Amino acid sequence: MIRRLLVANRGEIAVRVIRAARELGITTVAVYSEADAGSMPVRMADEAVPIGPAPARQSYLSLPAILNAATQARVDALHPGYGFLSENPHLPSLCELWGITFVGPSAEAIRRMGDKAAARETARAAGAPVIPGSDGVVRSAAEARAVAERVGLPLMVKASAGGGGRGIRVVRRMEELDEAIERATREAEAAFGQGDLYIERLLERPRHVEIQVLADGGGRCAALGERESSLQRRRQKLLEEAPAVPLTPQLRHRMEEAAVRVAQAVGYVGAGTVEFLLDRDGQFYFIEMNTRVQVEHPCTEWVTGIDIVKEQLRVASGEPLSFDPAAVEMRGWAIECRINAEDPDRDFRPSPGRITRFDPPAGPGVRVDQGVEAGDTVSPYYDSLLAKVIVHGRDRAEAVARMRRALAEFRVEGVTTTIPLHRRILDDPAFVAGEVDIEYLEDLVAGRVRAVHAADREASGG
Image 1 (cartoon, helix red, strand yellow):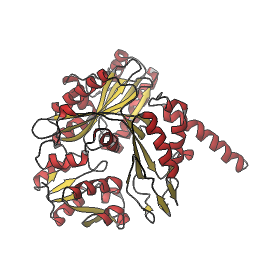
Image 2 (image 1 turned 90 degrees about the vertical axis):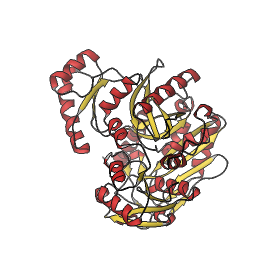
Image 3 (image 1 turned 135 degrees about the horizontal axis):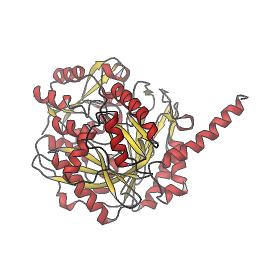
Image 4 (image 1 turned 180 degrees about the vertical axis):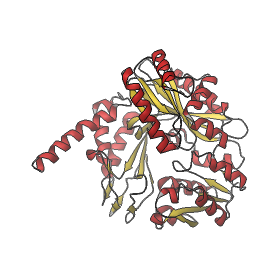
């Protein structure tokens, strides 16, 4: 078993990893930037090492800073969490070179699945359905037009590297194609350092459904059921649930089989998520694989009883999965709400500042994964996620009611949060009926934002 672990992240995921490691008897070492010197992970870890100034590129995104911290702390393993360097293939390569166990998949698996065009071809070769589109990267405008004519409109021009909705453009008319390619290329080069693009057909208002996988070094790969992540704003998830409303047992089985084939095709080890779009006819299509633990992993932990972070640590230590992959069952229903320091009524404007009150909910079936406490400061330098509220019920109706109760109990002062938006979602008839898709949240927010902007103009005399 790993003895000393560097937690190469911050916020709630750092706290989550520290807690899992502590239950396994592992000594934890937190890292922190100048802005996070007094943060909750630093207070919780057994030890803490500074890694540089507040800007992420000089601290949490700096390979030299992270590896120097690992050497200074004499750790034998490193957990990257999510975001930051978690899907940078150079990190596991350097860890191997320095004799440090990387808690995650191999550099090659991260590299192959991090390139969206290569991931698409890997999935196709593994027998997973993919959205009609280009065979790999498009190399010229003429090739792009030929693909567009074959695939048909509407379509999406997408960056091969990266994620988070960057380097993506929708094309609904052929005359928009050249400009979409130019803009997507520029954005991809700025965000990811390379501008390779591929093209695929745009599915109108699909649902986003992902399959959680866990694999050990002995070749066993388990599918832990699905999560629905359709509630997104600009391709950033806000609310997730498990299981997904539209999946029958037969469809779930087919998606799980496809996800396992994709993971096995790259020799995957550790926790990962294979993501699909599900159209209105019940056909699903592979879109990408996230080669790390997901923000929404607690939903799966609730319904399966499997501690995904502990499994990551066990597998990285060379142990087999602690459960029988064939015996995994989903029980009940789980919902997760991400509580961000943002103002949804004003285009999700960040709300940095000092948290003067932070009273999370509790009670039956409620779990809160938090990265802050009262008195902490929300920094403008990083992601605004404060905490995640996760609830579990016997069925979806009980889970919805339980989340309503939990959010009504949650008290945060000093910063604006997304709690009011989540309460609107949970009271919306379409959500209650399970009638959502990837455009649902944008539509819900847009109506509210228009009303708030009109009120602001009226108040200012405009």
